[in-house]
Image (cartoon, rainbow, N blue to C red; front, top):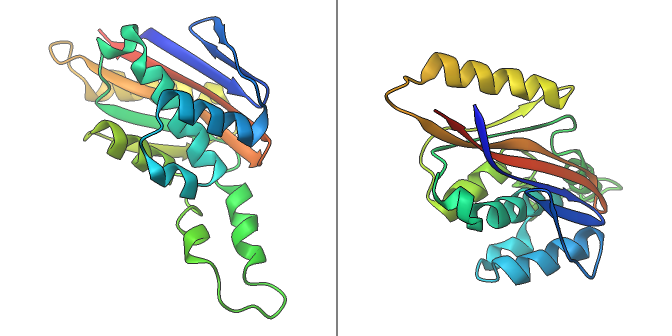
Length: 183
């Protein structure tokens, strides 16, 4: 496995291939700032939950990187520890206290794999899209090694967009995504 390109996003910082990206805002506002700077043409972004926004913008920035463009992903494999807990609690709030009309707009994002679908749609990735709920990022590495060694032939190298994408509160999130090439 070879890491071609990598991005790390925290509520107060963004680092692309070891170099910081200047941002003027923090938290959810920073994700919107990055969206406007790097995408700006996907209005569905504003309907997404924070987890999907985080993964979407991380992938958007990463896939525009020249190193990543040379190795277009054919699969997406993401993971985290908390699934879609932030949106799950928001959704639960719409059905509590006698309100029996839950929000369909929030329900859509009560599955953490929605982020992989949003990325796949945006970038026309038609291969595997998986989202795992794991205890630690090291477990994802084992899944990637297994996937690449068991399912791929040396004559058919594959590039995977993979990483950890966690959001427990609107301003408490972390993403570390990589373009990984099996050569």
